[in-house]
Image (tube, rainbow, N blue to C red; front, side, top):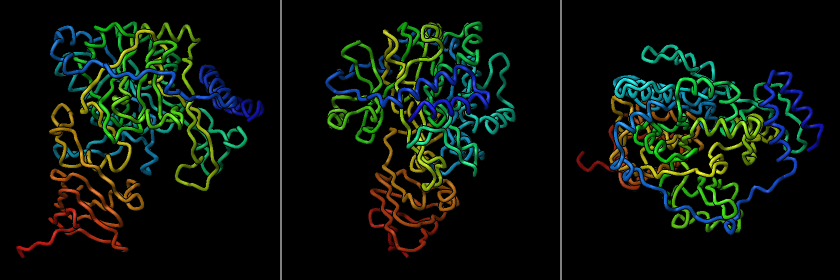
Length: 475
């Protein structure tokens, strides 16, 4: 790490036309990385946060007219910069088909547009939609939006472009050069960049002039993060500057970020697992001590955000996240690089009056892996005409598909040529080895397929349980 590395990175950004705000933000993160500033949030320095109000109680007490007015003053922002490289995707993750509905294969972006247009039509609100795209996702996503005949928007830009920055070599701090694909020399600046991007783009000014008071921000791969008049109404009523939706932890959620109360400032603080000291891990993952996890569904009061940005010269001082990767994520032999990022939920600690709302599991339905996609495409869900993903209890079977054969989307689709099997009666699904599935297969109980040591096939209509493919004694 050296001044030479930072200077080379800055010159690279300038040559590519990056804004002064983007460059200043990168400098701040680079200096934090260079100094190797400790990002531990020790258990002894915080108090557990365990008394978030529950959306069920909020719903019962909410005046519907007040809630509708709050939603009419809300803009809907989706983070859409990700490529889904963990699933072998090379385009926007939001372009991945996720559900069949009335004969149409719907992608994440189709469902997002459906949620927005249905809310506009049914509730009579404007609900501007904004996508924070990256340089890798912009064109393909906008092409889809232009072809959607039900969605129109003129007064508010549909897109803001997330800032990009150089990937830096882990051993030297110099910006990486990768002649095989120069685009891979760049990365988005992390979703904490959303705040200065909104400001830098002028969109905050546009929204304010239109009388929009609130922003609801969520990930494009979370289909549960739908527009909600109840949540909008609650946020408006609190008077809080910043609010995060949290959900009850289960044993499967211990790896996610959670909120604590900083003893020194008394403020709510996001603690990612990367900020947990090894000596504190047992307490940090105790779901009785820290009962909520961060859904990354975030509500922001626009006037408070603009004031805070002005106070900080346009760049919020969010903690650094070091994201270690290969320059080519699909090539483990390519050089090791560092991506300097921030998390948008960390902004909760910048406001004195931040709050959280405990929401039900249906508002957190992310797809991070093909295991998640398997559940989303399954018969556990029904999609309504308002593009809501419905399930009876949202307690899903644990799915473990062999990563050697199912991790990448092309391999996954090849092995489910008709559709994913039924999991309505399954408690867990484990597939080991190279299996391909016929039409109408059903899993039940703790379904298990062992590795046969060669490509294997589950014939049409078979049932798979704890003992594998069940014998048919009726034949």
